[in-house]
Image (cartoon, rainbow, N blue to C red; front, top):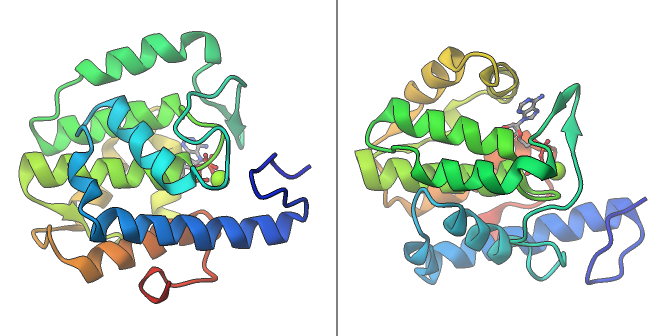
Length: 201
Ligand SMILES: Nc1ncnc2c1ncn2[C@@H]1O[C@H](COP(=O)(O)OP(=O)(O)OP(=O)(O)O)[C@@H](O)[C@H]1O
Ligand SMILES: [Mg+2]
C-alpha cells in the first residue's frame, strides 16, 4: 500500500519519484529563501518546521508527530505512548559541544517522530545545531552510505562509531550553498532516492 498523499498518487514508484522531486525543491527553497534561519535550532519545533517545509505539499502528516508505531529492520523506534515525553526531554538536552550534539541527534533518531522522512529531515536539523554551536557542518559526501547506516544502527547501543564517522566529515564551510545542495543529494541517496539533483530542480 502506498502512503496516503495529497497528490492522490497510488503508484508507489511514481510516489517515490514525485516525493523526491518536490521535497528536494523545497529543501533548495529552504536554503535560498533564508527560511532555514527561522528554524528553532536543537528543538523539536525546529525539526517539525523542516519536516513540514519539505513534505507539506505531499503528506498530511508533514510536521506532525506520528500516531502509529514504526520499526526499521528489527529496531522499533520510540512507542507513540512515550513520544511526547521523549521529545520534551530532547528539547532540554545540551548542544554545547560536538559530542553533546551527536548524542542529541541519536536521541532524536530513536524518537523518529514522523511517519516517514525522519532521516532526511533530521540530518538538516543536525547540521543546523553544528553550524550554530561549533561553526561546522557535516560534508555528507565524506560519510559513506553503508558506514553511516551501520553506525546509526549501532548508535542506539553505542555512539562511538557515529561520532567518529561524523567528526571526520566535519567542515568549516558552513555557508557554502553547493555543499548544502550536495548534502541533500547524499542524504537522499542514503534513503534510496537518487533520481534528481537538488541543484538542477
Ligand atoms: N536499524 C536502525 N536503528 C537505528 N536507526 C536507524 C536504523 N535504520 C535506519 N536508521 C536511521 O534512521 C534514518 C531513516 O531511516 P528510516 O528509513 O527508518 O526512516 P524514514 O522515516 O523512512 O526516513 P527517510 O524517509 O528520510 O528515509 C536513517 O538514515 C538512519 O539514520
Ligand atoms: Mg523513508
